[in-house]
Image (cartoon, rainbow, N blue to C red):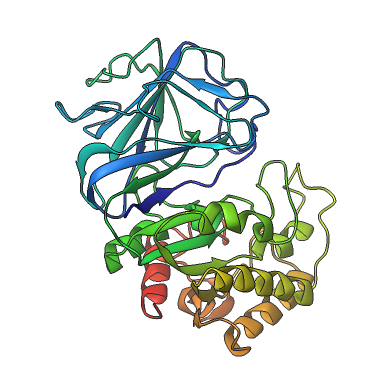
Length: 376
């Protein structure tokens, strides 16, 4: 049985956040991407997403291998991937492509490298904007370039790659569903210090990160992905081996109306707690219909951030009290209390604050993982 051991939620091509190659796409180039599986296996396969492509994307070839340093791959570990027995394939418009399994021993929490070669123009690329991990690009067919010398450009996004699966035979996967806090904003780039990483290290279970920076529970956005109540089915429920969902959403729905710093989202609607509660109930309904256990996480303290204001304070308190007390989630991880400053419970503890009073740093993400692990 194959189990999803790493995921990245697809996004519409766009130039927000960090510089990326999503709008220009790829042509006669190879793309090398490093990911960190959260469970091992003897065989590995990948999923490629063209969710936002209006035409099929021609893939000339793909390889997978164990990561060395930078763009380099461990000598002797490169394996050619096939798709229905062929090296080349097309990722369907608005669809996805699943590779055949490749014989490659993969260890939990040890990175693997996926290389894709495109010999035809891809057009704009479905991608995941904020990887906090370096991806590489080079001219020509570099599928078997173990040393990585041909990769002369770098970015911090993932392209087309939406999942890695192994034959781990596990059915105890945990999916974290959220926004930039789940995505890992504020963690040290390249160090795998998101709270999804910390939770995988702590529990030994497969952990899937289904966060998108800026994501909203109730509304779509050009930069920040489809609204959470719509994307849950694709970004969590469609992946094999998941049995637990952790929901941490609503911060941007509340906070975007308080700030002038979101150029793609004006005017931001002013939402009430009752609307957010309805959204949470819809996520619970969808997940339970698939047999998942559902854990609700309270919103983190946000005073002092650009998301804070009188209305944000009121609604965040009301939503958190519902998550804590309504009994509609199977369990609750009270992240607000775990990360609050005792001197001012509406603020992040200074030791956990990445600096913007909204996103934790590495230490804060470790505390989040500890709090969730305690209620699994």
